[in-house]
Image (cartoon, rainbow, N blue to C red):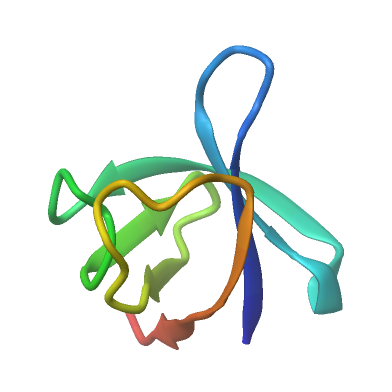
Length: 69
């Protein structure tokens, strides 16, 4: 699914899923670099993000995969 990753005004990382009109904070990252590892959203969803360079500029839209609980 397409997911836009950005920083909000408070500096928190958020994920926006346009198809669901859903925007949630990223509350946990399995890898501090975020890319290529699962992240957890504040609604409990876990998304697997693609490999990207650590210095990737935000906002960016990526193809992520929702992981089953």
